Image 1: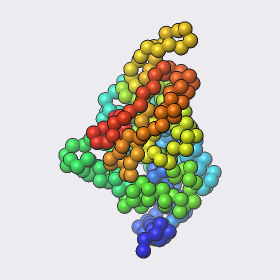
Image 2: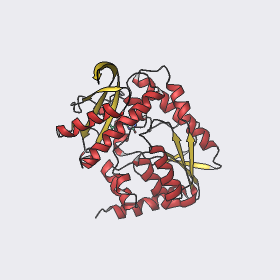
Image 3: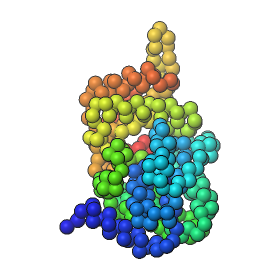
Image 4: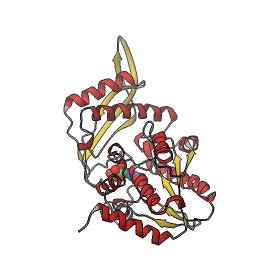
Length: 319
Ligand code: XMP
C-alpha cells in the first residue's frame, strides 16, 4: 500500500542511513526537482545540508530571486547564492551550435559549482534532483543506444576528481510524483506546479548566439505568455509552455512606420513525462492576446508564431 507519506518517511530514513553524520552539498537549479530534493534532504539531516545555487542568468524572469527567498527566508536552509551571470554569458559569446552551447553551460556549471563545493569543509556527498526520465534518456536517449540527442548536463556530470558520493532521492520518480512529494513536504502549489525547465535554461530557447539583450527580451516575452496562460486558467492543463526567440527578422508595421524586428515562437505541449508530447490546442483568443501584448510590450519583437509540432518527431525544446 504505497502512499507519498510513506515514501517520504522511507526516503528520509534512507538518506539518514546513507549519509550518517556526513555533510551534503545540494546543487539547486531553480527548478522544482532540485528544490524538492533539497527540502526532503533538509528534513532528513537538517544542518548537515548546504545548498549551492549557481545563478546562470538563464532562468525565467525573477526566478533566481524567488529561489533564494524560498530557501533562505522561508525554509531557513543554508544557501550559497553564486552570481555567475556574467561568466555564463561571457562563455556563450560567439557560440551558436546547440550541443556546444549545452556542453559549455554544463562544463561551466560544474566548474563554478565545484569551486564553491571545495569551500565547504568535509563535504562527502552531492545531492541532485535527478528523476527517472533523466536517467533513462541519458542511458538510452529516445531508444537509440549510441546517439546522444541532447547531452543532459544534470546526469553523470560529476567530474572524477570530485570524490563526492551521490544522493539522488528522486531517482525512481516521475515528474507528477515529484510534485506530489513537494506538496507532501509543504511546498506551495504555485511552486510545485511550475512547468519543467531545462538545465541549460533560456540559452537553448535562443537559437544562434545568446546575448544579454536577447535573454532580457525572451524573459519579458515569456513572462507575458505565462501570465496570459495563468489568467486564462490553462496553466495546469499544460506540461510546458515557453517562448523561443528566433534569429530571424521580419517586416512589420507599427503606427505609420515600417519595423524590422525579431520573430518570437510560442510553444506549449501536453505530456505525462516529457518523453512524448502533443502540441497544446489553445483557444485562438488566448494566443491572439499573447501576440498583441508581446508585440506591444516587448521591444524588438514584431511577430509571434505558434509551434504545432508534437514529439516525436519534434523535441519539446528547440535545441
Ligand atoms: P526534449 O527537448 O528532449 O525535452 O523533448 C524533454 C524534456 O526535458 C527537458 N530538457 C532538459 N532538462 N536538462 C534538463 O534538466 C537538459 O539539458 C534538458 N534538455 C531538455 C525539456 O525541457 C523537456 O521537459
